Image 1: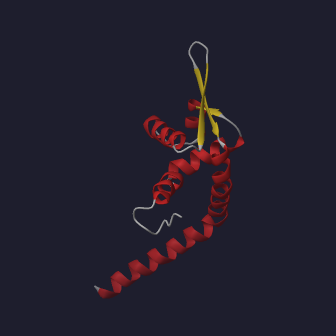
Image 2: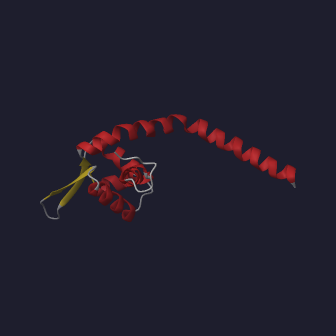
Amino acid sequence: MSDAFHKDCPARMVLDHVTSRWAVLVLTAIRGGPLRFHELRTKIEGISEKMLSQTLRTLVRDGFVRRTVTPSTPPQVSYGLTALGEGITEPLQALSDWIRDNAGDILAAQAVYEQESNGGERART
């Protein structure tokens, strides 16, 4: 049985892969159905081609994403979820939704922290 708290646990590597910012966005982007590379790049603003390519390669290798090549000229490649990908995407979508729903409170907490931190610095000087 894996225990992600142990440094040599394989689950820790998978946790790293699945919870990276780009992996979460890629997995939730293709939750609605397969997308081609350029469609993913357009949908996920700010991701470079290199990072999208690396993220897709990792997710395919880990068994979360299926890469499908349609023979044509040029070949068309699309990326969709495997059964494993569908299983992990549901909780990732819930996490993304929670973050979206609470972003205002999080930003407010950060502002309070910054104000208190800056105020404390002025008081010490």
